[in-house]
Image (cartoon, rainbow, N blue to C red; front, top):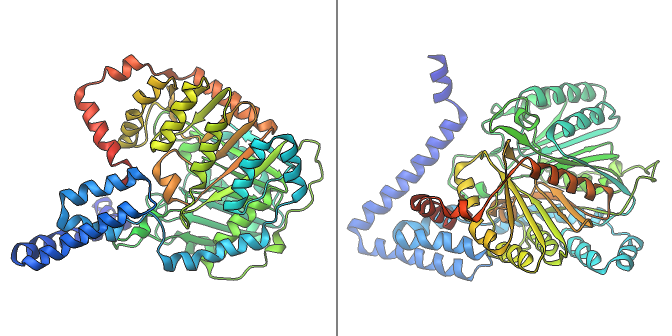
Length: 510
């Protein structure tokens, strides 16, 4: 009985019921009044027409436009109104103005060293152009005096993270999409509580939707009681709103300004295979030491000051001079991406790498829900002789997302792209490695939400030792994976093909 009561009064259940009631009430009102009032029906039809015109003239991705226009045309009375409530791809003007302080802070505290970019320009003009694009649209500079190490599993990330946390003396910043109580988080939390008690400045940001099924309601209050400063990104409220579209999908750790981490791994037991959910969970992270850690520090602080509504002296957290620079190779550029503007940086970074590739492109992604631009770029790369290999999961975490992923296989295979499914289980890594020169490791999935709607981050690298580490990790995973054939893809039933086609059309809304 207690279990039933807990389920019924669970926050998720109550919030979901509230939204469903709003949606049901809206539908009933529209249907009821449209049956009796001609002008009411005309008004909402006009709203739908205006919504379609707005969608057509917006800068949204064409696939996103189609995904909305179809339901609006099928349900002209209700569709337009529903789009106005939840169809926004970004923030409102008011929210953008409010969040502009994030950009202002990054402008103030992120400065590009001209000597570094000149060195890169002399070495490789293509790499220089890529890093200049990132610097221009994210304000994140490129560094040549930082060390990177690729961590090819959640377990390695966890072990390195614990060791670094134990050595913290000044501050610890953590920002994650998902945190769940268990072996991984409880081990980290014990260290955080101990450090906070000793006067270390410990701060935590987590996304409310990402943690809705993972953490108790108002978990941030519990953290504050431990001496851990805590902010919740975009708290989930039971109101139909396009605010629900924008989530903080970043994973950032900064310790004393000396060490930083980012990558695919969240903080929950499946990421370190303490709990099996979808077979063996494959993930990764990148560890950074040196000046490049400063970019992660500013990313975190700019989000923190916005959420906390406080002013912060960023200079207190400047990275100390790196003592051992003998391991610093190549160029490192951490960057962030947000829905605050119409510049889709993550997608542009990926497209630049694909279009400039000469020999090979190896990609790992949990979701291959690519738009037309990405599909064309991948196909053209393969057609011009580039060895394009993509690793996806074999056991999915979301069946609808996996169906959409598989719906892209045939077109890619026909163009010569090689596709592999990670046989042991679920591949959650998000990596690109190209021509033994470039690599990107971060939080960015190949789907619409990551590329257009979420706050994301990644690390662009050129000629670092970690580029080879990423390559070896992917090749090792491919050996344990099934190579998908065109015959197998074409051999599925017509029913499955129809379902996948329908899901693909509406993939931008998922």
